Image (cartoon, rainbow, N blue to C red; front, top):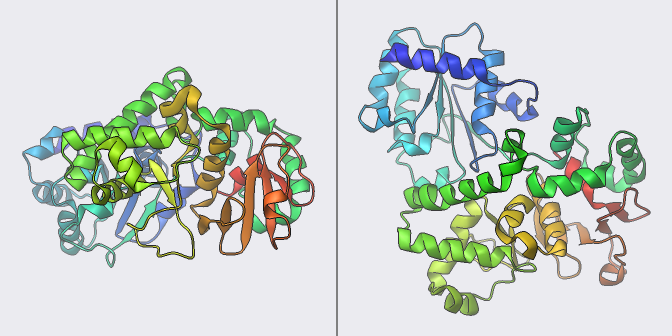
Length: 397
């Protein structure tokens, strides 16, 4: 049986493309015996894992295995790993670990037993909610993989090599930076493509059925991953879908738990749990004030879709342009910055910078007189003073 897995593994690794490799692959190249990648379904975790094997493990004995393979429903993972190590295995690449019962305990036992084996695994963004019996925090490193940034999307589709920009650089030198981009591509055109189909790398397979495939991905998270992790019944999955649809069509969604509870027939306490699960599944983003408690169950000030592509898939023609702009800005910044609700303006970044997001005619009225305040404006190629093109914030990762 092991020989069959080797055959499938080699074929799978050989077939992965390496024309475009995300810089996050560097995370896998560190001197750790246990490394994890978690993230939303469809962001490219498996591709990154296979590319690492193809490029960096050419001379090592390696095995790629997906734990959603029916084989592991009836066979013990530890026995399988023991057999692999005895046959000279150096690297074990485990995909979709959340499909295996007691995955964290098994990884702990593998780590503690096989000192010369390096394990790299991928799993759902909900991994930490599985309340695994083993704490792996002292035994390895884990990285959350985000979908493509606008910068990555442009580099991938236009064969450019734009570098990551710092927020400080954008705030101080946005005029010159914008001109350097405009000399090579039309950023507004690329932004308008990106918010519809650029976040998930599977647009490369077939742009025409991208929205259909994204809806399938969303349904799989709601119907398979969340029930598996959070023990949600199928009847309540339908309520989760209703809640997600409600958020997607809002401008943006300002939660009134009493009202939403009546609309969805979900109790207020359960509603808080469900919003938390949707946030952790990277389907929505709950924006809170920095002045209030940051408890995961505290009421957020606003709720956005996690990225504009999800909003387009669910709301279609009902997508609100202002909401899309804010969703894009939030999605591109939250990974590396503290983003909070702002009393004046739309967002407070790192407790210091205030941003108002809007169209090309947006004025300073709402943030007039506020220190370190800026406008992120859509539909402009080059900004002036504290008005910065919205698309330029897509170059932050």
